[in-house]
Length: 393
Image (cartoon, rainbow, N blue to C red; front, side, top):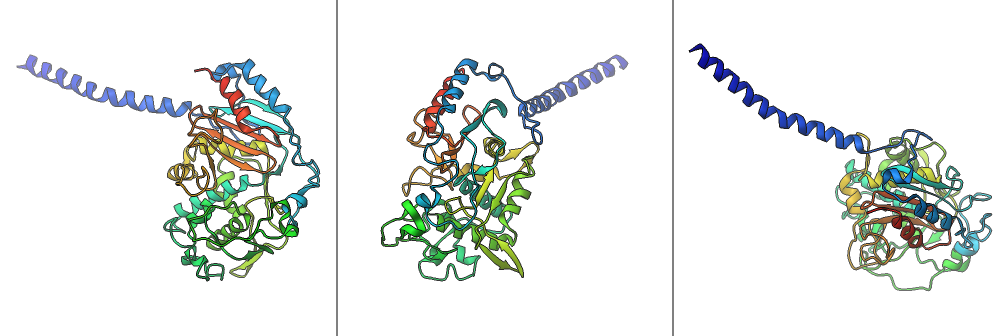
């Protein structure tokens, strides 16, 4: 009898051990996978890896970098002397000079190549639009906006959306550049008519279309979008970006988001700056290449940084997905490669934040690559092609 009980107990303990073992293995495996994801620390605490240690050919990668160094832009003088000729009358400050062409390449989060003054703080032009898109995703996540397809007029009552044309404009229209918003903001009219105000970027008069049916790259409308988000947050968007994104990803404190001289409004009795979607008329986001690389890497990691979801994963997906036939291959203020036309050498899943002066943050989830390349004349695809050639299959 005693022998039977002991045998039964042994069998029971054996069964329990078998049941528990897979669970322990699974947990260990999960932790191992999580530990493989690298995130840089604060400031210059960013690990560099030899290309061969992350599956890249060092010689081919060096050839790509050497080629990139020869592609200094001729479109944007170092002293910004052609700014008004190209874009029109300035509304905000512009630096006295800028860095030469420079860049950084990340593989699996590690720096595998870096050239030029990557810590130099320079205007990044329309890369700021992708930043505004990111703030919108956080705004929706916080519940300040219920649905991206809601009319902005449901939330903002400052006169900017009162007309029959403008009250149809949704948040999604703004970030798809299909809003057809009509009006004037900070001294610039939506139509871009007039050489003094818009320089070489001036346009011929045309009929306004129904919001959502016509794409036009238009900084006046993006600036209106930025002002509308300011109204919701009741807090300057640079502070929102700092608190919600840049501080959590351990970015430097050297970047700044500069308003126009006249882009100030009063909210709850406080004077606050409203920022722009670029540096077309001065001001804008002034930032280093290294900090842009962090921002790109945040998106590569689907909005997650270490143990915190900074940007909703669903927003990263939505913002970098093609929205249909109206307009180019464009997401929510991010440039896409869905049709393989933007960068023929790159995966169709890659995307980028782009700005004048060839400011580029290119993200490739398929190969876990981020390339930031600034102040260059070259077609980004030419560098992408060379870098991808260095990735061993």
